[in-house]
Image (cartoon, rainbow, N blue to C red):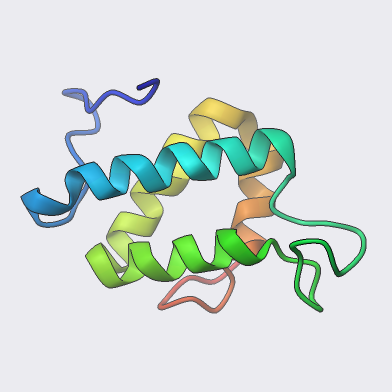
Length: 103
C-alpha cells in the first residue's frame, strides 16, 4: 500500500478492527481522484446532479460512520499529501454536508 500509518499521523482515528477497511477506502479515494476527479463539470457517468462523484460520497459516508469527522479530516489530509491541494479541495466539496463536514 502507498499509505503507511506513520508516527507523525498515527493510525486512523477509528476502532482498531476498522483500519484495514479505512486503508481500502483511502486507496479507492486516491484512485478515484487520479483517474476521474471528485468533481465534474457535468452530471452523469458516475456523478450526481451536483456534479459530485457518487462513490466518493458513499466513501465519505462510510468514513463518517466509522470514525466521524475526525476520520474524515485524517483521510482528507492523506489525500492532500498524495494528490495535492487542488484535488483535495475537490474532495472537500464532494463531501460537503456529510456528517459534520463543511466545504
